[in-house]
Image 1: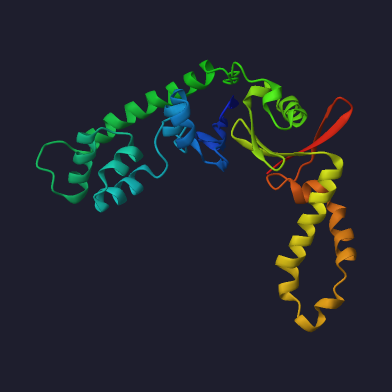
Image 2: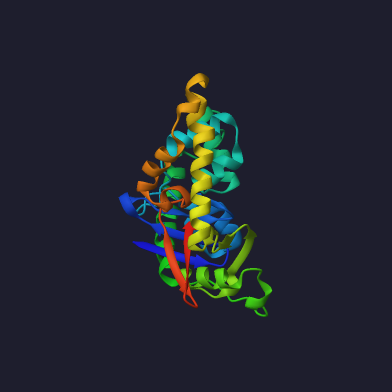
Length: 260
């Protein structure tokens, strides 16, 4: 199973690769395991996030008992509840059993049996949620016109590349935009070359010259080094997220798009 969800404020990829549920994506300028942020924006994926790294068949959390014992011994009831996906009473019983201070007939075997049934049902629910939730969760913002943007053609280019409505794009300044939780640089060919050269110059100053003995720094051939570096293409420097250069043409002008 693999499904990508697109929302105005995030993208989320849900898989069960390797036998474990995973929800990753981009949200609020961050990428990777951002399920907590995604669940706050779209509660419909909250259970999917809760089962992140849980077994896709049994629903059992990864390292359920070892980590559960750790949090129980630390006395961290809330983290234990989040980890085992259990009630407060169940967490307290687990902690009592781990510490050997249990005063009831409630056994670890009985507790594990209750949790195992619940976890398996939750795993089935995750598949149902992923199947029933549409991949396109985006909504157009009424009343947002292209004229409202400082650089409408770049907004059109990015919206075309992302296959979304222009109202989902937010201007961040200096050719940078955010859409569906992802940040992009959108520039013309000339602007891309200027930023590329600027980026390489900064790399020389910040990363190369400090390691070159000062008496010999004047012999460093900046232009020759940049010529060699440019063999990797602009995306290597400007597309910091994935090293890719994308393009979209608006009214005969080609705009170059980089995820940053």
